[in-house]
Amino acid sequence: MTRLTILLLLLVFSCGAVAKESDHAKWNADIQAFEASDKSQPPPANAVLFIGSSSIRFWKTLGTDFPGYRVINRGFGGSDLDDATAFADRIVTPYRPAALVMYAGDNDLQGGDSPEQVRDDFAAFVGKVRQSQPDLPIAFIAIKPSVARAALLPNILRADQLIRAWAMTQKNVAFLDVVPAMLDAQGQPRPDLFIEDGLHMNAKGYALWVAQVTPWLAEHAMRAEDKRRQNAPTP
Image 1 (cartoon, rainbow, N blue to C red):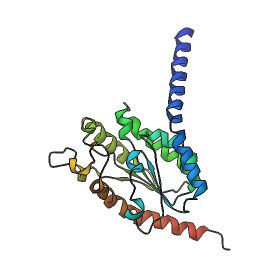
Image 2: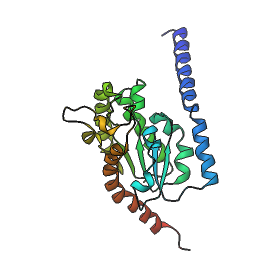
Image 3: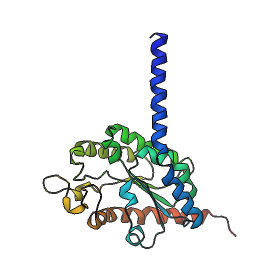
Image 4: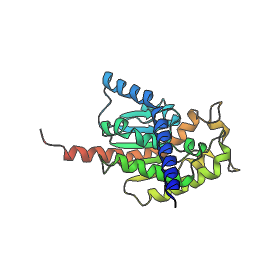
């Protein structure tokens, strides 16, 4: 390999890194809004943190869907998995949540990422947040099949399969499979679960997610909070 070739490769990689950093930067306003909200109205301690893309951001009924739990919603824009990793120090670590529920991945696939890359990005996210909370229980809601992105269904199913397999090798990482309930008898996305854009869910769609998340929370969120209480110093 010639010196010129090496220099050209370094240039390509550096440009890619700058572009990726720029992609993350477009969410700065959203992250700053979260931080401002935290200052004016401090979030609850030992809460369940919901993080990810717009399917989390539009989940406006979290508080009533999960009675008995304190919840924090930190879904932002049309974000990718690696955006959540990039901002984890600002929108995960400060809350020290009792449990974390993530949904992301379909924007990644829509943007051209492979199923393998999506799996790797989720693994990187888990590694990042567990630098500060090694035992944090984490659940990944399966990438949903939607009417608007029906063409992505093979990649969605492949990414879900890879994430499920990886999660099974990890401690306290769960894969919550919402996909079967969101497909019709022909294996296609159910239109009745979505609003007009065919991408974001209506109350009926979110009810299917609640049915998957609730049992996991009952097993993990309460256990994590009880363990934290036991380890807290005696006043």
